Image 1 (cartoon, rainbow, N blue to C red):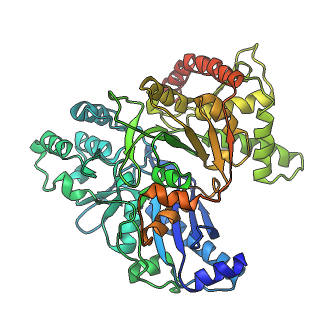
Image 2 (image 1 turned 45 degrees about the vertical axis):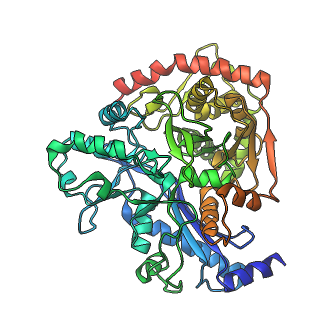
Amino acid sequence: MEIDYAREAIKNGKTSLGIEFGSTRIKAVLIDEAYTVIASGNYEWENRLEQGIWTYSLDEVWTGLQSSYRDMAEQVKQKYDIVLTKIGTIGFSAMMHGYLVFDQWNELLVPFRTWRNSITKRASEELTKLFEYNIPQRWSIAHLYQAILNDEEHVKDIAFMTTLAGYVHWKLTGKKVLGIGDASGMFPIDIKTKNYDEGMIRAFEQLIAEKNYNWRLKDILPEIMLAGEAAGALTKEGAELLDPTGKLEAGVPVCPPEGDAETGMVATNSVARRTGNVSAGTSVFAIIILEEELSKVYPEIDLVTTPEGHLAANIHVNNGTSDLNAWVSLFGEFAEGLGISCDKDRLFEILYRQALEGDEDCGGLLAYGFYSGETIIHVPEGRPLFVRTPDSKFTLANFMRAHLFSSMSMLKVGVDLLKQENVRIDTLTGHGGLFKTTGVAQRFLAAALGAPVSVMEHAGEGGAWGMALLAAYMLEEQKGELQAYLEKVFSGSSKIVMNPDEKEMAGFERYIEKYRSGIQIEREAVDSLS
């Protein structure tokens, strides 16, 4: 019955497609009118450090987009015996922030500078002071101002600045627009007007007035759109770019492009106040929907919005699971050396479950999985480190537990600050690769943050599914608020909830105290190992 329902949806174009450019994979998810995933496709990619800049090639953006779409379309053919030609609606999402600038001929001026770069310290500090509003180093406006401070030649030629999601949407629809959530990671938003903050726009333009550029900031930023609004349609050229076989029909309605923070909110039904979600992958971030504005500026917390424009606190940690994944790969190599073939997912499960047997404070072991700089604690570059003392309890269980704890430690720093503001968190929902092994990272996160953590059945689908839901939302006849729509979407969903255990919370507190004390080791490593 389900296959017949999906087949009819595909035939009649009653589907929604979400494609998200994550830090390690590009994923395409096709859903039917019941919001069920009926096909998906993936493409794995990695950022590269080139001349001191973390970047992705734009050529690979299109290679990955086409590959993930092709995989999804092939799955449709295999499962339903249908060649995919019609799609009801499409949405694109991607990693937020970063720096993509183009000239009047639509040519890229400098290689894509991603969120992962920690090269805008001066700009970040000066703009935060000017705006009295936290501007993290990864924000697009910080990258722009740093380029100005550096007297970079390309700045005078800028005609358009956008994010990765905005870039893909522009090329496929011709529209230079951005969802409000993704835009809130470029430049501060006025929650009342649902647009860029005019006062801050004027302050910035006055700041750079002596440069006499022939552009104004407001003119080079994308137009802001809200969830549910129509943001253009797939052009003929766009359809061919997405599906080079020429089978996909043009004219598909496309919703506003969004950031991965916002698709995470949607995929976890976390757009209501006092709810939040934690996305854990190469980077880790927690988004908590606020009831009111914070009393002061916190450098560790930046303010973004939901896809409807409600205020949210974003605790963004540059380094998540990269070092953890590297260690798991090393154990995989060891297994192969012994002649043991082990599926990668199975290897993760074995090692993660081993961590459950570790001491509550990791036996004195410390891991700093900093592949890149970490602005929350002012570490400019990455130096992954594992540290122990001679009397530490060096076991596999403690080793894995320490690395899992490490992926959450900077997150805890930010959430502890929110608690000082009396921000209430009723529930958090985890999603992303870290939560694939049931009951491990979820349990540790509840202990770290002192709040119930749930994982939903769609957690593995991540932001691409969330983007597909936003695409489907655009076609709702009677939209109402996004929260009401999501309640309908999730009405039959199951989830596993874990409450924080007091003994494990105390253990994490002991671990984080030692972790904070050892941060100087990381800073010394940056200075000593160039």
